[in-house]
Amino acid sequence: MRFTEFDFHPNLLEGIEASNYETATPVQEQVIPPILAGRDVIASAQTGTGKTAAFLLPVMNRLLQNHVDGQVGALIIVPTRELAIQISQHVEGLSYFTHLSSIAIYGGNDAQNFVAEKKALQMGADIIVCTPGRMIAHLNMGYVNMKGLQFLVLDEADRMLDMGFQDDINKIIKSLPQKRQNLLFSATMPEKIRQLAKRILHQPAEINIAISKPPEKIIQRAFVVYEPQKLPLIKKILKETVYKNALVFCSRKQTVKQLTRELKQGGFNIEEIHSDLEQSKRESVLGAFASGRIPLLVATDILSRGIDIDTIDLVINYDVPGDGEDYVHRIGRTARAEADGVAYTLVGEKEQNKFAAIEKLLEKEVEKAPVPVELGESPSYHPRVYSGNSRPKRKFYKSGPKRR
Ligand code: AMP
Image 1 (cartoon, helix red, strand yellow):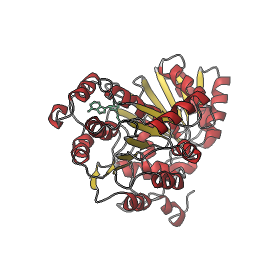
Image 2 (cartoon, rainbow, N blue to C red; image 1 turned 135 degrees about the vertical axis):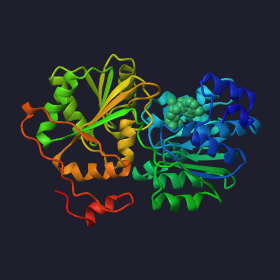
Image 3 (cartoon, rainbow, N blue to C red; image 1 turned 45 degrees about the vertical axis):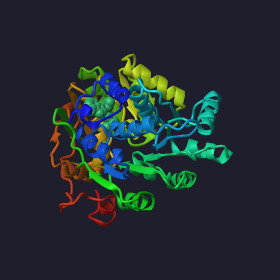
Image 4 (cartoon, rainbow, N blue to C red; image 1 turned 180 degrees about the horizontal axis):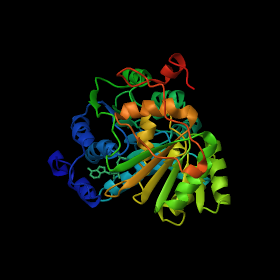
């Protein structure tokens, strides 16, 4: 379906064209019409599916028709600063030929930004993209004016709940007018998201884009190792692989810091990103990585979603991510656009069951690469595979067979 078929405002169509979007992605095809028709929507869709434009375009189109001076038109709540910045860049690109105003409101930036944010919240802006914590900081000061709000969007709602933002979200929603259109996007649909949806959505259109599988063109390999073999192995991989940009994921920031230190000492030109870093530092590191000045980056899952850098051709999971979605998100950082990519996962002895559960979810056995002989003997792959057809829940690990 081409965007011209949606009957969008001509200035918005210009922005779409300038962004080089020609045809709508599946989630856009399904989500845009009910939003344009004024319905609430709940959609399970992940990063990489085009979900951002799926909600931005109809919201922007409506705001172009119903712009009210001095009011906030749409409030988009997201879990992380990175996502807030990314969405507001999308807004800027798509709204370039319109008069729509927007601002991103997130923590960790300077006092000057706080003043600009305050002004937008008092005097109005068509679109505000915010993280919950920062929004609460403004709400607590008592000047936030949401009287004219037309749209509430919760993006990556599952992640927000996982990060403990439930109370903040409830508090923000209390400050909004009752009559508004609500859109909820979530990569997964656990019960707690359904509960949240029940509370805030009114007879929503439900759109279910099946869990995305990683693109076939990503070459996936796993190395089954003992934990102490991981460091020498990653050094060897990084020395012997030709890449433009390599992104290494660790689940914990402690591991990110430790691994970065070790690799720096090993002579690698490398930086790290995790939630302990100041926002300005994160941005400068990402900029250096995107420009190729720093080819190698170690990060927590903070970067596993939404970071779109075409030159990432190698992703290494230094540990096995928490679940299948995280895995898909992590390895989906490579092979963006037309490029190819390779994703290696180092599977420690105690991570075999977790990795097997991911393979089951993906309905794909990831090829096990031989561990270089100089690293000594490595374990065989013998997970106690979950038997059952549904996706294993984390709970399974507690009540199911003991992990080794
Ligand atoms: P998202 O899932 O929203 O993070 O989008 C993933 C990437 O797809 C972003 O780089 C978007 O700019 C791009 N994108 C979104 N919609 C389209 C489209 N219809 N055609 C081409 N690219 C798109």
